[in-house]
Amino acid sequence: MFNITVITTNGIYIIALIFAYLDPESNYIISSSIFFAFVLCIFTLQTFGLVFSGSIAIYACALYCKMKFNEIYGNISKLINNYIDNKYTNILLMKSFIEHNYYERKVYEMNHTFRCIIFILYYVGTPGFHIGLYGVYQKETQFYARIFLIIVNLCFTLIVLIKIMSTWVINFAHKPYPLLYSYLCRRQSPQSLRMRLKILVFIERLSGPDIGFYCYDLFPMNNYEFYQYMYISGANYILLNTLF
Image (cartoon, rainbow, N blue to C red; front, side):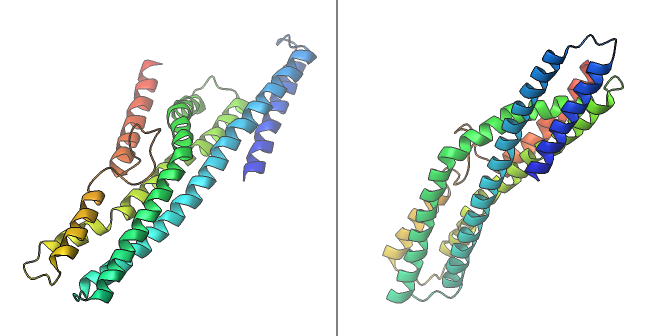
């Protein structure tokens, strides 16, 4: 997909510049045409490389974390629904808590890199996507420019997919919270005071800061921020069409 996009986009660049050079009214010279083609090819390679590589890396890590947190939730749910206050059950439950904390640290390490990629795509890619989408529907836009903008807009839809994939981690990392909280609220819960305190500590951690990917430590990529992103993107696009 990456190779097809880059080759197609660069081909459109070269064809458009050839037509512009052959147009007697454009006053283009061969040296400037070659220079602009080279600059645009490098820019396209870097931009699409960041978008595709970042999207694939975030998808792979988010899917892996989602599966592991879902597996941990399944183990906790099985133990809580059939809880028996004995040493073996308590050890298995604590093992699930420790495994959850381990993958929480892994998510924190992944976020150290992904926060920069998400920040760039969020604050640089989104305005570019709006401008490109605006240019597609303008009557003054030339045919080759319109095709290029359509390809760019299709690539920048990966920003929305990255937002969706980032919410996977937070949703599944905090999934045991309502289960454990409802368990402790039961009147007859056969657990010792020591085990009850350990569950409370784990609940407090799940009720704290979101466990997942962030936009450069500014805000977590959760469902609320995804809805905010879609709302603000739509409002900005309408404002752009209204002003121009």
